[in-house]
Length: 263
Ligand SMILES: Nc1ncnc2c1ncn2[C@@H]1O[C@H](COP(=O)(O)OP(=O)(O)OP(=O)(O)O)[C@@H](O)[C@H]1O
Ligand SMILES: [Mg+2]
Image (cartoon, helix red, strand yellow):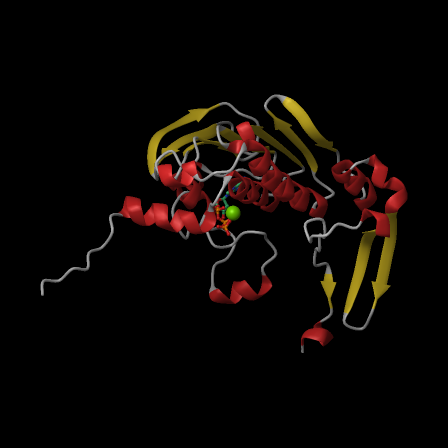
């Protein structure tokens, strides 16, 4: 029998690997929002068109990237967040795999403009199907501005299986709620098809919950604050009439677990 095993071309391997990270527009939004949080942003703007199927843009005022890092960021397993296996046990960032941007660039058209505060100019990069198609120096504010267009343009089967706009939008809202509730010191906005859907200035947790879930929750929130030997808990729970029959509106954010409990 002849040998039948072949190495896949990089382009196909990249698309397959991308499928593990990116299933729908909401996965792109999760990754881009988390990158902006990790970059120390104080303001994050999310702008989407057609439930993210046409375009997803995230603008942050975080630390930005150097020219070389802006290109490196799209390589697989390229990250500034860990250096060794030991770092895996004390991760303080939301990302660490160095997978997200490489995955997104494999299955979409990506434009990235980024500037570090101490630099005079920004770097603008365009990627298409994992290939760098353009790089230039431009004027821009410090921070990072990334636009992802035509998601799954080169994986028609995946594009076809995207759900209706309202369903995809629901997944996007879940991600936006999750990240914005966990980062109350960041000013978030969300625009969909030209309309501002959320405007969430830096605030305390209660104000952020009301901003995300609606002012009608004001009378319905019960503060909880409990400190035990193992862990400290704080936050809010809803009164019984706000209960839902799913886990979708339960958000947990690890704050403090005492070493004693781990040993
Ligand atoms: N908005 C941003 N501002 C500044 N640097 C960024 C931004 N987005 C990405 N980067 C840089 O690009 C690198 C690659 O990003 P990418 O999201 O692919 O990987 P990661 O965040 O390190 O890990 P993960 O794949 O788990 O998200 C990051 O480690 C970071 O250094
Ligand atoms: Mg990331």
